Length: 243
Image 1 (cartoon, one colour):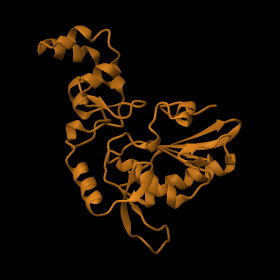
Image 2 (cartoon, rainbow, N blue to C red; image 1 turned 180 degrees about the vertical axis):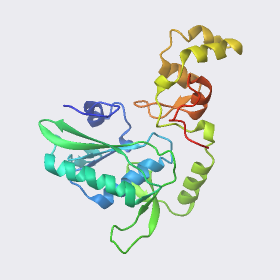
Image 3 (cartoon, one colour; image 1 turned 120 degrees about the horizontal axis):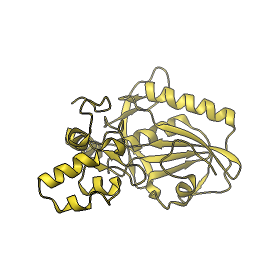
Image 4 (cartoon, rainbow, N blue to C red; image 1 turned 45 degrees about the vertical axis):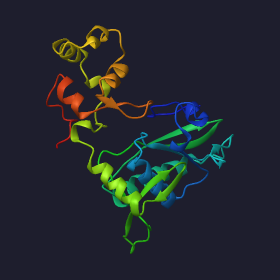
């Protein structure tokens, strides 16, 4: 099995070892409207689970993948990727673009769509892809299903997104390598933290989590804006978004 651009192996995705089942959706074939709703729901990430993954070309039974996969042709994969790009530009507001990665499982081609929680949520998606219908709605995940957010669910989603402080937001344009251990250690020593003695032996992932300057799904951590503001050697990094 092989994969590109993903923060997790295909084996782990198919086994559910590293990602909760509610963050996975398997689709035997390509349906742009269904995929659009699910991309919107994962991007909204209303429970802060870290978004999710859509695996196209694998059938689902009782929430689990059916193997070997049915697969999709390489030519079809290219068309699907272009459609996903177009959906992100024209059918989701604000615009949102997931990561797509063609992979092989048991000699058959599939497409994995990685949908991290979005930086500019809440997101709306078009209810219909008909040219003359432009009405949009919020979509969220409830357990392992994608549903339209209505009433209290919609109010909760909007409230959640509006109350995440700028400093506490994940920066998906940056990486943990942008955090400087030297600056972190200097700060911890200045404030007299016992954690200063552990800086050199702790991996940056554990250190950043313990200091609450990084977060996200365990397979793909992102630094928070507060970490980049205080512990980045280049205070003018272009990846830091404007307030």
